[in-house]
Length: 142
Image (tube, rainbow, N blue to C red; front, side, top):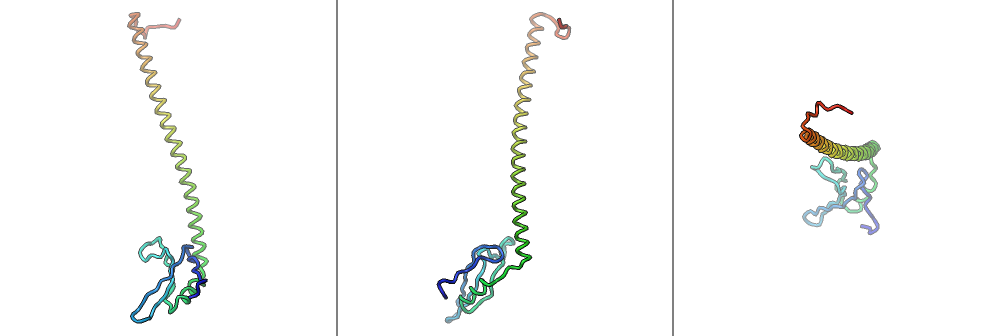
């Protein structure tokens, strides 16, 4: 295998590629290349792989000349676009949630202060009524 031969990234997802080798009894070997995100069980993994080849150069050449399906490339771009839009919306929602939480906190503090002031007014009204022996409901403005 030539030392200057490098594996291109996966043509479908852009992840690095890996060269695999399977040794058979005797000196027989099979080589193939797959996406580093390859997973037979993960539905979010990449399923890109070559068939088995007799030499590493053949497997690498087969991998490096793969052309992605234009429909897949368009779908991948659309998914990335939707991910970006969702991320922006999530950021907006987090900002709104933060603003709402601050308004609720401020509102609660103000409600507590109003309740404190109303309690003080009630105490002062009762103290005045008790001190003067009058019923505050009979007071008139002067």
